[in-house]
Image (cartoon, rainbow, N blue to C red):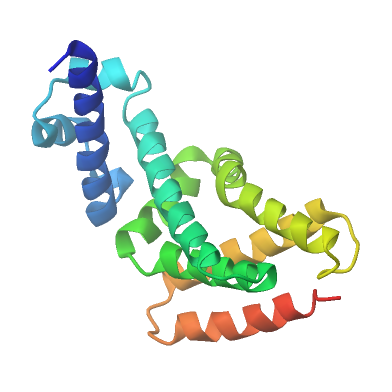
Length: 194
């Protein structure tokens, strides 16, 4: 194994171990000593890859979780042929993927804003899911499926509504909560159609 491969492997192990620990116990309950012991590396190796320590490591874990959710959303949308159906399927998949797994919920919705702060968490969200939502809405406006209007405010409204719904779902234990959110979401999206 080359040094570059070894460095990449060490980084990947640190992110994977941290993801498991953060998902099961939460950011605040996990210490660096436990992370490096579980990963089988030194603190020096951790700081080599993540100069800011635990917060930088968490940022990498959150980015990985957001990428996983993004792939689930893209797969659900891509399974539909019609652009409108793609939007609805993507929105459903976002709520499902961000709330079905307790570890994803904890990392992305509970610890993410608390650890990184609202502004940085929002910036990471905008770089991933909000960007895809903007692309989908732009296409729907351009083809006349949605009435002509500025897309940016619409992205903020829908992204905010879905993030708020996901946060609420993360806090509720009701098994029917997801269905209770999906029905009004579909009605809300339907109101946008031209």
